[in-house]
Length: 425
Image (tube, rainbow, N blue to C red; front, top):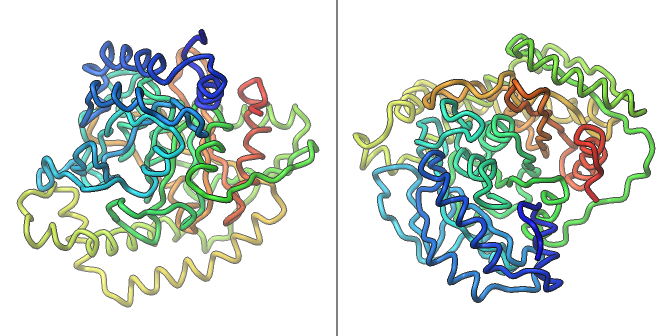
């Protein structure tokens, strides 16, 4: 009999090797849910009977054999409603699973239920609380998945990111998270917001868990070998470093010092002034594409939309086609320049968020340090830092070159080996 909790990789290996069963694993996680869910409120849809039924007939040979997974409530699921945290879609029942949910099931994963999101994965927040401090937000739209992971309700969780919706909750809740390069993972069966940025991502308890899910959701995905040489890393503060709280800045700088002490090379990277406009261009494009994606809901159910979503429509209405096109052109012009800046490094480092999780549930704080890199579709990863018992989790963001996701994951293993104390093989 194995002892829980363990990361997803260990759980699946134990099931395949006959050391435990999906049913035993499911019961352990169900006990946690029963004990803590009334406080955390990670789930919007949950059925213990469905979980047990799935565990009784799961695929015991897949890469995710017996691994419990939480699914953000913007992914279609045939067994659970998909409601987007909107009264417009109360009890909306899709006829089939989203493509990535199907891939998870085929790999042997146990779907534990649907996790709370913000309204249409935008701004209007739900009831989920941060397990580290119930008075604080767990983050933005992938909040239920992140809080459920941090509370031990499942071993993996699906989320999405358009601005900061995956890495921000990871930073606040102390999780490993991976957002692949734009376009690598299918969005079939996922409600769109801003297609220029929308990306499926996931949470895990280790870097190797992030890699494991990548192998399931990106057929043919491979992580290259990187010689165990000193890593070449860049540390980029961006033009908004003044948003970083002193304690968070200290934690990040101490992480950089640890990497240097371990023999890795970390160089300061300063961006040209032209990159200061990326934050606003991302917001402009997000608003315009979001308004188009939700045009049906706006036209037919305007009174059922939240003030924050209506404000998005108001901003989009005052933005011309030429202004949106110019914002996209600026990002396209800057992309090769950013690629050139990143080229000498195995990965870029920076803040995931400039603060620890704020008190209250209505505001989740800015996402600037995340959406800057997401504006270019680059792969992003969060490594949790826990600077001290009195301090809430802090996230170290790692950024890779476009479509070099495997290199980023391999580099993250070595970084995590230094910062977490053990290499995740």
